[in-house]
Image 1 (cartoon, rainbow, N blue to C red):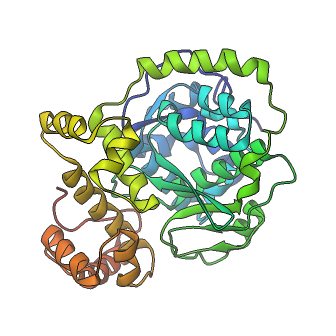
Image 2: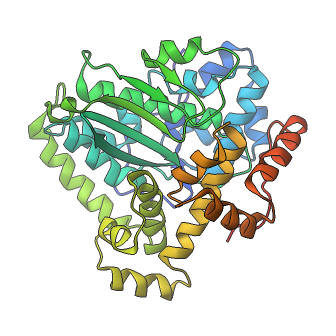
Length: 366
């Protein structure tokens, strides 16, 4: 079978990607995977509140909350816990549009990945990617960006399968990860994950990541066309200029990345967005927020996700969110949700048993 999306490898120049959306290209394989299970596509689109023409064009913007619900519904109707993996496997790097094509022709793997991290928002806003290097190992991390009430496992699995393809494309057929970690509970069967990633897969971890030897970062990109790169970079520069993120969105993504990198100071966030910290503070103040407020929001969002979807001890959740102690995390979480982390987790567990598609949240998002 072939994808129902027309032209998934091409994107119209300068198409505007709105915050809270992703290009339909990433869903190119969903119709074929559904057909393999004998499940009809259109009723799922209807139930998710998406138009039946959604997958007719790779450039169609998909509202993230509806797209995540669509994947969650599809996983439920097919009774396939690794539905997202099946949809993400074998998608070429070009589904990321101009961002993927520039990375595909970068001078070396590290440059390609850093350019992809910088510009992935031009494809969509589903994930915040981060690259870290420690003790000779590189870790490519994906944190889900939206705050939604749905089962996000299929969406994360799809994104991680695409990330694996990106790394394999840039590094070449000799590349193999050392380990893959997923911030979700282990499914009933793990064979599909082992086959997809070709490396040990660890579930119930603090984030989604692919780990590989850092020496690959200095290797030339496999099959890159350096002459074409300059043309693509010019096209990307124009598109990036026309799709500049609002300062709040940029700072929020920097905060999410900072939680992975281990530094969420105002200075670090400002440096990440290319501004002096006083300038960033003034611009955020004009929007009625601050780095501290954004950090509170993202800590609460990620805390709920880890408490609901992993068995990580409270101490590890606190450490992941860069709290100095369990006590400080517990006090903050109680202020947000009116429940202790352990009580919230227990309450969320009871709810999920009766509402498999809905990830209810306690309290108000600040």
